[in-house]
Length: 171
Ligand code: 4NP
Image (tube, rainbow, N blue to C red; front, side):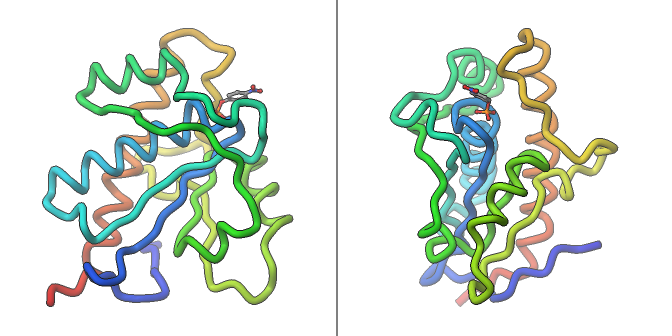
């Protein structure tokens, strides 16, 4: 089913997306970097504001994981984020919060109040080849895990952009 954002997207009011995983050093910085790269490539960079965060505080202040960075770089994508912890205020900052796995989703929902209009969803709802709803955590795996994560996030970001672009208003 097509995703329905709650509002139109303009340059004056860019659509704000936060990608969330556990550590904010592997999956969500990769999602952020890919999405940013793709919207820039399409000339749509000024319609979006993207960020990422982790539900855990283990790596706060750190650069993205070295393997995540080198895999992304080999695909032309730079990961520039520093890890931060997701918190309650993020519901005031973002239109859409996308969780990498079911555990991240559950952690986000425990912080969500009834009044926020922020939408929370799973990243892989946008994966055109997805059968597994989680973006697998590559942290304890080998290089192949990072490549798999990159390709899942590339497909999902592309489809997310496809589903959001009809909501862009060109003034
Ligand atoms: P991420 O991967 O959630 O994709 O950033 C992880 C990074 C670190 C840890 C777990 C997952 N950790 O437990 O330190």
